[in-house]
Amino acid sequence: MKQIFIILLLVVLSASCSNDITMPEQNQQNDYSNHFTFDAITEPSNWMTYNSLVEMLKACQIPEEILHNIPTDELIKICLNHPLAFIYTAYNNEAVGADIIFNNFNGFKELNSRKEHCNNVLKFYSDIKLQDSPIQAYSNKDNFSAPIKMGFLELYLASPANAELLSPKNIGKFSKVISEKYLEKQQHPDCYKMLSLRKSYLLKAKVAIATGELNHDEEKSVLEFINDGGTFNNEAQAKRIISLTSK
Amino acid sequence: MKNLICFICAVLCLATNAQNLIILKTPEGKDIEAIANIPEMSAYEIEQLNKQTKNAFPQATFVCNSSSTYNCHSYAWNISEGGEKCWINQFKSNGGYNVALYWTNDAFVSISEDLAKKIFYPDGDHSAIRSIIEPDKYESKWGKGPVMRHAPGYGPYTNMAKRIYFVKAQQENSYETGFLECTINNRSIYVGEAATFKTPKRWSDEYSFEIQILNAKDEEDVIDTKAIINSLSSKEINVTFKAAGLYHITYNVYNTNRIKVASYTCEAAVKNP
Image (cartoon, rainbow over all chains, first blue to last red; front, side, top):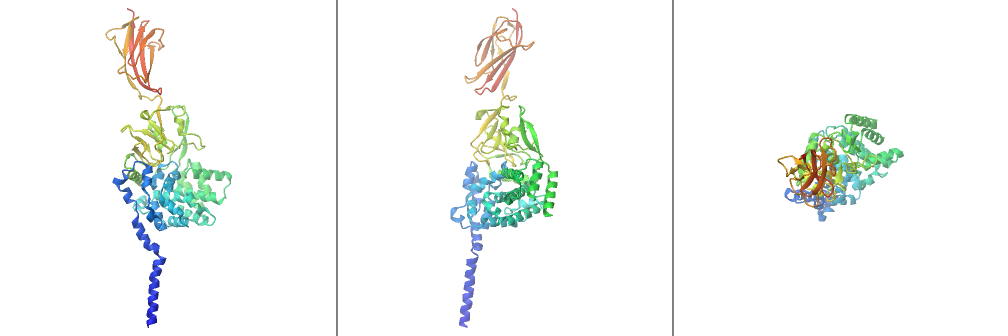
């Protein structure tokens, strides 16, 4: 009886320990997501005091003491919720605009330093549930299906930080997710119009270059499109890029 | 099969939203490459982008709605001059200069900050116009975002401190106009009589002056033939006419950048004594 009791006690103890060991992120997830939001920084009376983009970017940083302990999925959400994430829409070359945030936010630097972050980001993107209407998409702050926010994520996926997704090991999975999301967008045309579809073409263009299946002229056209941040200058160019990236 | 469906859907999408390259002209006739008929965002997206911009840049004032159909360069150099809504990139699709053509041997000339009407941000790939409502502020289209009125260095672009300033070289109504007042104002001027024509205000020494005197009948320039300029100053001109007739007198004022800042005129009726 005593032995059974000891064994039972040991089993209970090891189960509770195992919970602590195997799911620290679960416990920490709640702790650290509550530790950091941009709310204090963007509180109007404080935010109003910043006189330039440089000052705003400097203010929008995660405290170093918690940065390295934020679970990766929470870190991705924090990055996407950056108060200035949308400024890429102000730039003629959206990739240049998005780079401003990628290069000046310690959240992205931390995310980029994590092993397997590319796969985490890809899964995050894959799991986004697209919405039927813009109202539904924009209604929730943490709804990353809003075209502007999703566009920011797609620009991040297309950035050099996630070049690993284009490696032979990952490119198949990357291409599959891009195509799935693209099809989903086309099934919700009221919400995901050409500006959103262009981000999918940008990602497809990166894959097309990486596969090496384009001839010299085709590659030149696609690279120009990528270098312009995924902008179409005219219908003929658009048709060409769509055709080349649909192979 | 899936790829084919995607392609067909995409082409159909394009067909209903066909943007196209167009050619605009600078005031002096140079070709500017622009993109027209760009599909517009949904009303809700426009509202969201307006809201996010206003919240993120509270020191700026919202002027008008976000739109994907035109951008900063088009707003500053084309639409504000009466042109159609379209998107103008800094460089042409072949890599050649595009926006810069407006100020390269064309209608717009480099000027000091205080006199500028158009502003180019070379590091930010951005253009703005001086606000008429608040002259110490600029108004610019923030990409697909709204037109905002803002302090020169405030906005979503990098290095907004670096700016180049322009004004239209001969902008209609950009200079002051008025009348010269003749000291002989109760009768005609006699041939051989010196008459003084005064400007409405005195100009400082940094300005230069040019006089034009034309025969009203045939617009012939009569300086040194039928009209002798005895003296010219920052507030008046003294002239002796050598022949009877009706003359147009114009007194133009230029700043140090050779931009006309004022033009005063009058008619002088000259008769034989």
